[in-house]
Image (cartoon, rainbow, N blue to C red; front, side, top):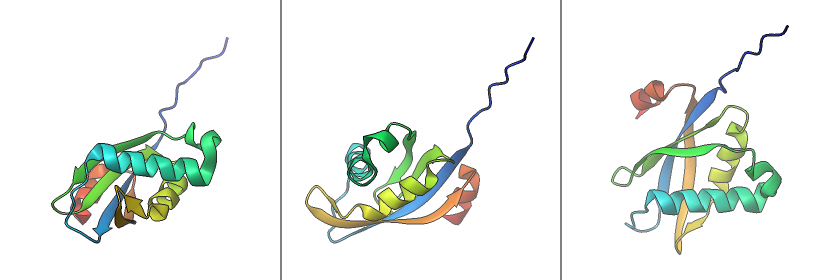
Length: 110
């Protein structure tokens, strides 16, 4: 008789800055779409299927966002953020700043 224990997957939170050439504000949907396109383009569908990605916070006025992902896909997300060059015709850089296991410590950094 075995006992199965469901382990909760560890989460990571990634704080990133949005550096853009114009005063354009992007919606959560637009940012997420660009990140997913980057993941599909550079890592393929096989890796994209493994990724649990949530944009937990987006502040267009301060130009930053916080993404939640699993600890196993953190490096892929960071790379995908760095590879986004354009959103809706506006040149951008999504610059990962800090990674943490809790959102509270990221809020302190902001």
